[in-house]
Image 1 (tube, helix red, strand yellow):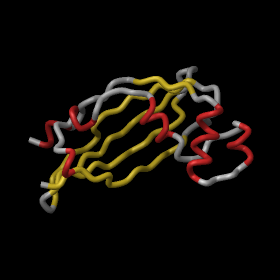
Image 2 (cartoon, rainbow, N blue to C red; image 1 turned 135 degrees about the vertical axis):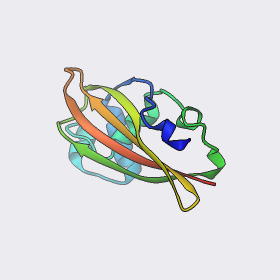
Image 3 (spheres, rainbow, N blue to C red; image 1 turned 90 degrees about the vertical axis):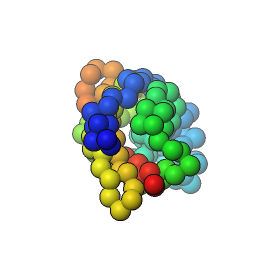
Image 4 (cartoon, rainbow, N blue to C red; image 1 turned 45 degrees about the vertical axis):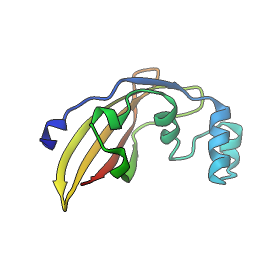
Amino acid sequence: MIKNKIGIKTATTTFSIEPGKVKEFALALGDSNPAYEKGDSLPPTFATVIDFWSGGDSLGELLELNMEKVLHGGQEFEYVGKIKPGDVITTEGEVENAYTKAGMNFYVLKKMYYNQHGDLVLISRSNIIERH
């Protein structure tokens, strides 16, 4: 039954990267890199901001998860291009894998991030664990 979740797609979302959001995120991390404060570049995990603030589907509803038993199992980012303040990023995601192991359900969500020119700039994978 869990294998049926493989291939489920998330809603496509769009997010404009504002320099102020970059600075706020860097401050929240305690990272005083001047490039982040000036808006010249982004902290490596800024894609988290894109995910949380761009709207889209609730993964809990999409995967029919019992949110009281869900853990964040990990996150990885593969930068294949440059993302900078002023870019408009569009994301497309899907469940890349789903399996059960040791009494838990594991979901691997893959997201592709494209800039306003249609260039792929980032691939992320997150692992969601649902305890039985």
